Amino acid sequence: KIPLDLFPGETRNADLAVIGKARVGKIGVTIEAKADEAFGETIGDTLAKASKVSYKSNVPKRIAALSEAMFGQSCPDINDLRYQLLHGTAASLIFARKQNAVAAAFIVLEFRGPKCKTENLERNSRDFDLFVKVLSPRSPNPTSGNLIGPLSVPGGGFVPSGLPLFIGKAVLNNG
Image: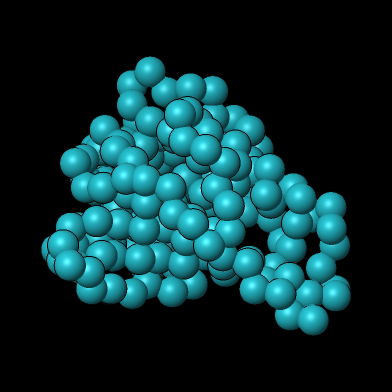
């Protein structure tokens, strides 16, 4: 569990959070494991749902703070991005800083098997590519087994600035 901010509510629940060692020092790594389920709702859908609840939700404030920390004040239109990718990458940076690491990595581990639907895997790939493009417009599309980075984010709140971020995807074929 990685707290994203001081708002009450859910924390980021990474599927795996580890510290790796490299020549340059410790690397904080969080992993999001997926088969063919989506990376949660889009940010636009999440905000729309939060506006309809009868109690005061902190979700819009959390999204605004994380978006500014990850993309800056001139934040692009992020409504089509998946919320889970936004808070997953932010949590990687937060986790790495708490561990006194010199860099952070957010990795999607995709399990592919005979029960996975091709259209869902393709959707996830498009969603991941779109997120990386918005976060780092000059970066190439991520390919399995490779990290993109180092990327730099403006930071803010719990999200540190100046900590190199790497993003990647690995695919494990099961059958």
